[in-house]
Image 1: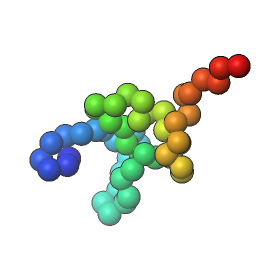
Image 2: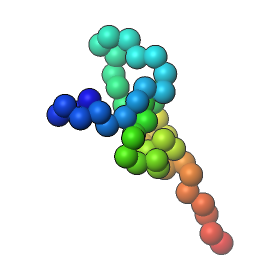
Image 3: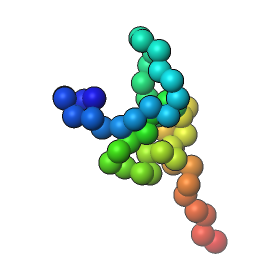
Image 4: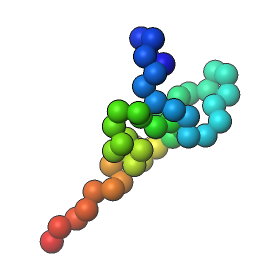
Length: 50
């Protein structure tokens, strides 16, 4: 919840007081956020064109 609006869902169990971020939740609004690296926040689904 952010400002009273549900913005995402837990992808793993989250204990009370635990940090909620990319490593344990996913966005309802941005499917790409589900592929971000949990440590750096960098996209992991990008393709390299040569």
